[in-house]
Image (tube, rainbow, N blue to C red; front, side):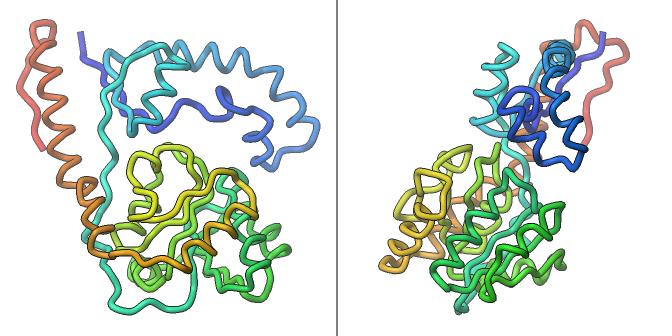
Length: 272
């Protein structure tokens, strides 16, 4: 019998969370969007059966581990995904702009970031592509710059030189937020998802409570009066480097194989 280990990034969002919220992200005809919720019971059943198949589950964050327990009634090991921290660095000098990065889809909440910066008149750069690009451009003022997809070098430079990173979404882990912190930049982040485990309010950024433009505006005004230590912020996320991930995943698999090897045929070990 083969040992089946699943590394899970998240339970199916549009099946288990707010179905209407997530299906609105897809560009299907309106009739199909109305029909989809009726099939969700079958999708959830199929997903639950699939989630029961692995012998062990690894969750990519504490937040996902709790969702696995809630929806699948299963325990999971927590091993955070790797971040290539070598690509990112603290800038010696910041320029006068804020930054958002990610796929341009509804649940990432670029819309409230844009509305907040329209009101403030501060410069905001947005890196990424997605189906909401045209919609977001329509509501963006002249102080909002869309850079599209950029090279790794340009991404690292934009992280390093921004004043702060705007993170208004609820994420299962939030790699872009970790990349920004690896660049020594403070976050202005929604207090939800796994980022609450990794960002210290007042030390590596500022949390806001509600996903609306007013809360972002208030957080930015608070940010303007504060100072942050770039070295402290970067050091706080070094634990996510890919070398740590490799060591942890190897240790976990070898431990589980050791428990399971009596059931395995032709066991020859594991190599990285």
